[in-house]
Length: 509
Image 1 (tube, rainbow, N blue to C red):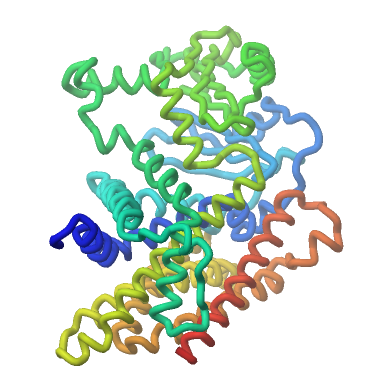
Image 2: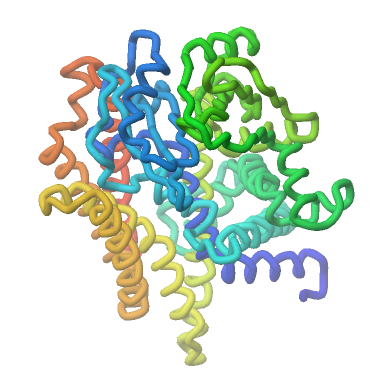
């Protein structure tokens, strides 16, 4: 540590950033994409580009459409209802083996859509943000928690060591040498988005409180699995009753919805779930939508499936309501277009903050390490290129492969697997290329990113007929589907322009 508090904070800021920066960038990158996860889904799943339903939705007709898909012995099935951003209904069911399956439903025609041939954003990109797709012992979530704690330390130490915060708010010299302009941009994105960085990092930690503090319930509920199950039921709500092992019928879910909406004072459900389908003791859960609220409420009502009689209702207590408010601030599931764009901009600022921090460290030590024969810069530069440019490039490969796979005629499961394999394969190649080419890899991968972004837009047009002018020429026939696809294409072209500028800037630096 340094001889003074400021020097100690500078050392902490430098080395915490170098060590954890690669992981942080991946989390921020996929978190930024998660803000528009539904729109990316529409882009990657052309069959979902349908018009938003204009007539009241019948839950009974949705259930009738879903019924032939539900296998005998299924433990439960659920339908997530369409929204303004996601105009399709999503049916999922859990079989007797515990595995989850799903289909999409057109709420206008009450027909099943073609099987999903992609995990898309909500199936792959979004879970990467909070789990890194490492399920063993929840290791992925623990790594994300470690990164979040490190980010808080970086933010606090950054505030301590940067004494001229007000001046840095107005300082950016893009034409200076790379080290100087990278530091200016690092300071600028850190200062401008500082409240967002604190908020999004802290709320991300609080969301997973039951994972990071697994003994949280012990003080009030005692030790053991039974005590934890009681805590989870009282915190998050849970009603259960055993199946009767006798046949039963499903009554009118529309009638149940009317009862629920009256109880909620006009609130509407966002999903319906049926437990023990076809059993005399089957019951139905409706949960109130939070599209108009920051708080991701846990307001649930359970009905007897045959009679429609209310069996139980759950509302979160004060502590869990506060936790769900914090969760809502992080997930931004409520409808607010301007705030969603501000979150997106804040996420991109975080990505730039991490990238420029790497650049400043590397450029500041390049000559010194070369003179002493040290390999530190080459190692860190390879990590930085692969984890920054490489992950962006791999994401674009994921999207390009999504548009190419229908040509091969693979089944849905094979197509989704090939997309994921292409993503990881491309990502590994970017690391190898970075360590091979060194500094030149920044520019070369930026050029590939630009080409892939344009290629993704062109393939989307060629394969689906959807393009930027669709929404303007045809009006809004596809609702969220058309607007979302046009938005994703626009952002891809912005990525291409940004990559071209960066490649040109690196050539002259």
